[in-house]
Length: 381
Image (cartoon, rainbow, N blue to C red):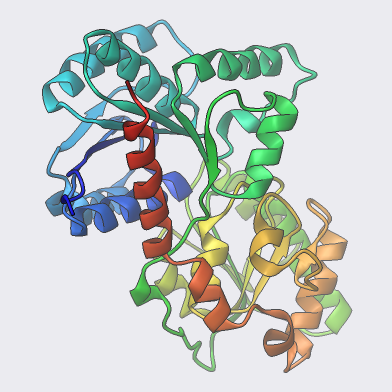
């Protein structure tokens, strides 16, 4: 039997933060371990010290290198310059897989891939939305423009990859039924992460970890925390870990409610370090695709309370008692209180560790992605 083709895979995305960056890092490590050449193209103006440490961890795996150029969040004239610079560099790398992540990454991968195809290069163009454009409302002018652009770009797409079925359904509702090949490939975490993280006796009762912006619900967490204290009739302890543009506003919100000493704020750090400081992880997002933090917490065998949003019910179970109404601090508080007072809540409500691991591992995710890459390449003329 012939040896499988060695692939040259380049991942394109805008900002090296959050779930997209985590997703790409896992794919890079798994695919490099399988013998493929892998590289990254992303924005040079975002990310901080924490992200630089993460880049340092994967640089040895990036045989196609790490390329960083300015890529703005909103559509701008400078995008054309970024495309031209990217095209020249990517052409020299001779990739046969261009995988775009998020809206801007999707544009880069598909447009550059189409240019390479016009020059008779054999390259597959894949796109994973990761939420991104799908957060736009079809009823707004800007939403219509963005979603129509997504539809137009299907002409230059060999395969769409969704990280959960919710994302696929949202794409179909907002953009339309895909006219190209698509596949749902669930996010997963590394084998080393399926190790319990035990909290010490002085651990915080509840942990919020993520970007400090309203979409992720830090304000809902603070409100729900205060309501949970009132419901239980005793003070609690909380921890908020992360960075973002609205940090000062959330600090002011805590001060106004007299929570400044009971909720501590800390900068971004590796998730497992944060898990070791708290008993229960709270994910109060208003919108999500398939958030890694829920998978990471469950792999570490931490109890999770979360909004019933995006792909989270696909992780915890559609009818899970751990799910709360998105943006509803009172409903979230009720779930938090139940998790705090019921000693059997975690064992009864959380997914079984063995079953969970068989579905949400990065090796399963990476193998499925390789199968798709090879299938797309085989079908090219």
